[in-house]
Image (cartoon, rainbow, N blue to C red; front, side, top):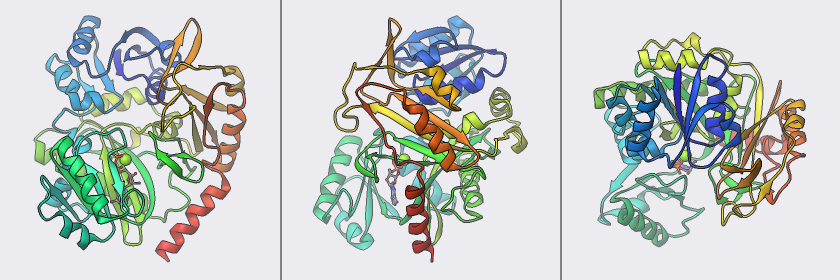
Length: 436
Ligand SMILES: Nc1ncnc2c1ncn2[C@@H]1O[C@H](COP(=O)(O)OP(=O)(O)O)[C@@H](O)[C@H]1O
Ligand SMILES: [Mg+2]
């Protein structure tokens, strides 16, 4: 089967690796040369992932039979609509269905309309009328830009916004940029990600993971695309209670059903829910319309069943829960990023590593936004390499990950605290204080 994968990061490297366990011929669209991806591919189109017409022409020329869209940009640009128009089925929603991710007001409204549990108290503003009163009423609040912002559009009271004036000012900026802004209640608890696969009727879960957005250790510094993540052998997380997973999956199933009713077509692809476990149960922060990056690396390497079969079933609409079997292993993923990442990345710095050594230690290496030239690997402005330790428990996975990164050299940095006993203990303690 000829499959097109759109995207050139570590998430797409993991997707391609999962697909390559079956008989497939892989084609990829990416901006830079990702050497991890390139070695799996029959052919590569070097291009921005949002060039939807050019990508569609190329896919037709190559006789592509199925496409998998990695990042959100092309979903928003309508790549799935274009590909479906010429008869290429896709893993990933159409532009209309992708509003699940691209419009936070759409998703909050969907929750409200279909009475889906886990919604926040929220209001959508198109101008400043009544905003001050709403902020005062919420006390602690979150201001969300109503468009795609690459993880940089959300600001929280008490963290980024000190005063009501700060909140008003930021909300106004959002309105100027995207025409509207969502202002919602701030939940208190620990976050987790549930990446579910959907054929538009049935959703099936995967192991939960927790990402780390802040650039520096101890969850400090600027927000990033994600510095690393971990998952546990029981597919839950150490700070959660029994039932949290099921609650998040039930929210996802209801959202899938609501989308089908609202848009009149089934949602085929990944529904990646960001959740917070709070004193009052599981709350939904947002949905994304694709795998998480880094969280894809916590689940896809554990998949024992065929990812290709799952993708086919999503397209045919006969997905069954038993189709996705994941190993009972823990994973820790840490990103190696260019010096300055989060503020101003050092672009074009060479990175060296011993891939055999990394594999020998039982870890996995996924290339991210790097560029290979003449057999050498260079940084771009985004994350460089993801290293994943896999073991029976999180601490062992963390140790494997740390040993494996030791051969990586260059002007780069990473967070060593992800998945350590100290970091985990802090989260467990915090959660038990919140929930009593
Ligand atoms: N209602 C909320 N309560 C508490 N924290 C929130 C809330 N909404 C968002 N956040 C925090 O802000 C981060 C980014 O918000 P999110 O809705 O995931 O947007 P995006 O990923 O598009 O930036 C979340 O990961 C979470 O830490
Ligand atoms: Mg998010």
